[in-house]
Length: 387
Image (cartoon, rainbow, N blue to C red; front, side, top):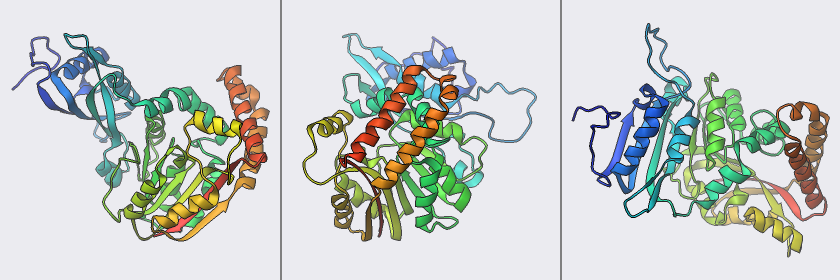
């Protein structure tokens, strides 16, 4: 069929399509045309059906000069927002929306051109009542756009985990990375550690994170870097890779969110090549029963915390050898104090971009972490193991 997708004369029966595929189309449409088309596509789809599309983002991929270029090189977050916010209703008043299955760089462009601006999305039509609470919690509560930018101001540019570039350098140095090594970063955040590994060691890094906001920032930060890093919105508990894919699996202060750690560690073991290493830093707790206050904090955050020894044992049970399980709480306390002191010193700069409430939230949060860790309840562990 030859047709104009923006034409109101294009008639497709509702709930009749299993898959809609689009390649380099939306970048030629106006913002309003895209919004209207997305709403129509959701109506055309069957419940459970998919929309898969790829677009050039940020800038032109090629270097050929054009006298006329009608392309809109948008930021990926524009497409994500339009598709995520689309809701349609059927004749019975039932509400439907799109659930993001994945959003990722096209690997071939990253590998061959070190270009992260070719991006694809896969969405599924779902009933609006379906439960996606955890991803919504991440993007609407813990890692809102402003929240991420606030964290970056205290952790350092490109980082949203303890110690920023300082601990990244220390920990990555333990991995014996070589040019061409393939690294999986689970909970990649906004990409600082991935850029560091790719640029310093010439590794190929795949960063995954369940937070759409985190990956959106990571993609933006990749512009112009010309390094071999690709990013994807993905759930590490459901994501699959072929056996023996990675030389290193790296994760910073992320797995505290995962309830079934033994199953995840078994997946890590399968995904690693023989001799490959896993390195994890993570929040832990002291052995024994936590206080009521700390237990309430763990519940409110939805964390699954273990003592350092038990954490290391889970890695051994998954098949790993040479397991190192270190309590790094003293280092955690030192880093927290340094970060807080530096943050307070730069208060005026922070307040030029954020509010007093934002400032108070960060300061109070860091003081609370210092109190919990100084009391011995919240711990910080470093884990290294070999397949």
